[in-house]
Length: 508
Image 1: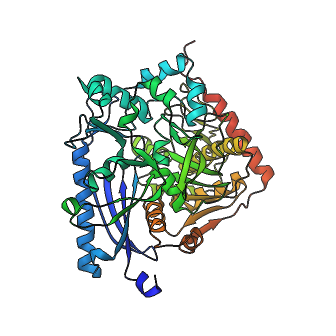
Image 2: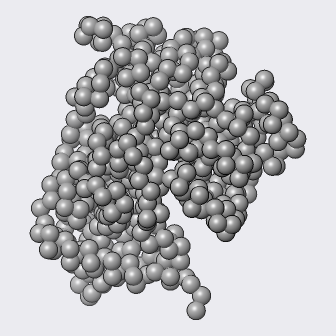
Image 3: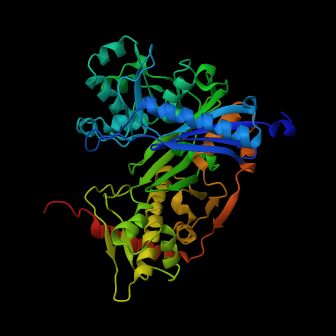
């Protein structure tokens, strides 16, 4: 393919999220040619339950695909035959079951956030299965993952289990559902990253694990074939989409962001600063089981090989800024938090521990609660805003320290994206407290870009990871500037602050 041909070719990338569907068309230089987004309905049948209508979700995704293509045709003169491939990234763990013949869902999709199977997951732990599950899947028994959701649907839809065992039912995460629908029912596949989030997939043998299938009573015949994340699975059906384009990548959203950030080597990590914070560190070709209850997950499947990552989640990241705005009402916007924090050189000993919903790794304390500590008569709004931003960085360091201890790999650099990554003050403190570089890319839409890169690699649109890195550009880099002795003292005080709030809700 010549350079002239490249300028006439595009990649269509789908970002199927928890609340919306997006469709983005990129050119070879990762310029956005068109972008469409549409929200869909969130269904809450009972407290703690979350569902999506699979048909509505698909129709939403199909509409934005068609809108983005029409927009690019109108504004850029795109021809459909110039689209080289379609890539898909998706909300992980959400699961759908449908009739193999009619293609109709047999129940709503159960969303990753749904807690209806919490008792089922707790029973797995009580019965001593947690170690088995972690050793085989890298996960911990939790309602978060897909396996218990599949079991719940099979157990609760009358007659469904018998039909499933006869091979009349198919199951899959959202990538599987979209590929099956977009291909007109020609492909029932998933990729290694999504399979690794089901609690049914052995990340060592790279197969659906029969012992785990028996444990959750899930028939093997309903599950999709597992393939590389960068691979041509099928082509889009002209009857469904109006055109034929190779469906050439599928990858879970956090893994897509890791790839989109160019974290190709062991020790490279990314954090997405959202409501919470999602951290993934590339650990290379060998899975690393965590002693700190982090998750071991498949980062990527390509060319018949898989790469692994450690994953950790901070419960309250950017949400602490929203708390200052909506509950304390001391700021009117996230930007104002930065402006106030810039008025002081430090938090002057004020620490916020945003344990509003407990603490994750390395503490794992569901009974911890939030607190502001170190207040003096001179403490003001600026110090509190600064402490809020610092709290995000401290929690990320907690997770990074766990990852370094588990993997024995030093952090090369931390690449950042997500809403709170616009805060220069917070990112500088993140670099200081970690003692390593923090890098913000020019393109912070790393999730959908990762899916595009993988689809392009599958069809030769891009030739290699090195070529992809040429399109990854730094917007700003933050180097450690604080004395490490001072950083150590601050981090020690953070740990003391955390100790003060632990087990707060435990009964006397």
